[in-house]
Image (cartoon, rainbow, N blue to C red; front, side):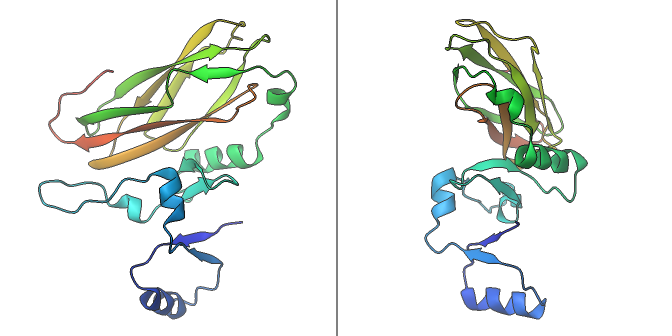
Length: 208
């Protein structure tokens, strides 16, 4: 089910817009700003000197039952995002739950700071198998075509670690926040990683 989420400045204006466009799908008006409080979306800034992306105002999010964002992007505009959404919603969990272990990461959020638009920046996340069974990362879903990941497809032995290399190539200037969803046979799967930062022109590319 698709639920349209709004936090309008004016309920009256929103009703008029929906009525004028014969929009009769379910909507959710979040007066308490609860979804934003849970996910900590960035504040949109509008200024000539600080050009943050305004796409956050009109975006598509895939939420879990706790209203946490699992993926972000418009599945109608990108086949990769559509496939990612489908994998998250109806993915085969059998492989991931037959033999379970426990995985931990050195962090789940990476802030690139200010990087260059249309240039590749990368970082690595360290994954450790804390359980007594082999850890297998079966897939990693991407929320955007501007991201990519590289990881070892071999099982990780108990007590050992591996790395996930995440890359991003921003195609717009302004703030970005992209999710990578790790599916594995850990009790805390899926695990959501977040890449965020600001993309500008004429900034030397960073490798963190």
